[in-house]
Image (cartoon, rainbow over all chains, first blue to last red):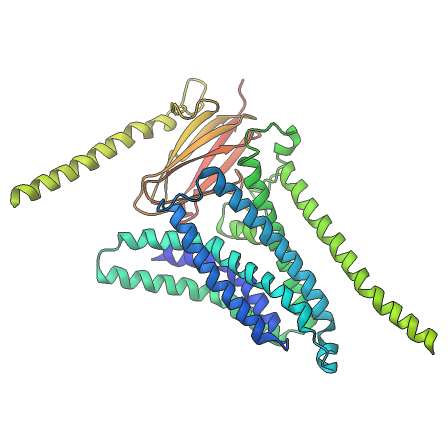
Length: 293
Length: 138
């Protein structure tokens, strides 16, 4: 019973973090209804994806065998990581101007609509990826049940696990309501970017030990850079959670550091470029306004 | 009727016994150490290029819970789930994550490792930690 609670809770946290932030963020938008519909559709599609992936895992269907599966996982993780960065950039544009837009009634649905697909896919992958493992675990455990009592305790455990993870979701909703918008946005933005880096790192590690498994890379890429296992091991429950949400590694190798620094440099450059682009028309308008006067 | 039932049961038991015998003979392989203290490799005609070791997962138990392998050498771990529940072979330190349904088998390639200790565990039951001890070849 404890195991079921643990697995369901742990596997749902990542998805609920993404969904919780998107949901809380939409609350203040005028087109929240449309957005939430896209989000919900993404969640439903995610369950579909999870079921499909489970079928390949338990060997019912063989569409994704061995090598193809690894590539699929790498692609899915990289795509999710890119979507998160894009989502943060989108939220930056719309978050900052939100108040003025509402006040002047200028909320542009047009630029938003394009991004609803981003919301959809992000929710779908978040649910589908971890969901497939949960579905398989639950299905496998379900097969072992033999008495009414065991079914009862099983479904109870699964619900408790999900309820525990939902606390995070509600905390995010409360946070969105009671903490100032600016701070809420800043904190969730950082959490999302870290999650993006964790997904990117996971993708790269699958690449390293999968398709690149037979390639001889420079020795420093395989070498441990430092060892913090005695402080916080990434095999412990907390360390493992930090690994999947924040890309924590207690024994990072050169490859990990290379991938993570690539990610962060790219993200910071993108955000910097974005804020410059964003400010350009404003300063120009101001200049125009001033010169017109 | 009774005869059939008995036949059914005895064949069932025979299958289980045969299975446990088969895995019992395998279990001993990577649990054993050779003269230099390294784990004994699995002889599998499918995997001849790399040193190959066997890890079996049984409802949270890892068999063996300790592998001793040479430093800076690529190797393969064949993972088998012999338990009654799904298992997930996971290790952030080895950069692996593989879900296995009951009776499933898979194999992973581990990149060259520095001397040290690396954990692996069943992510669905992370109470027991397995250890990969990497030591010098001498």
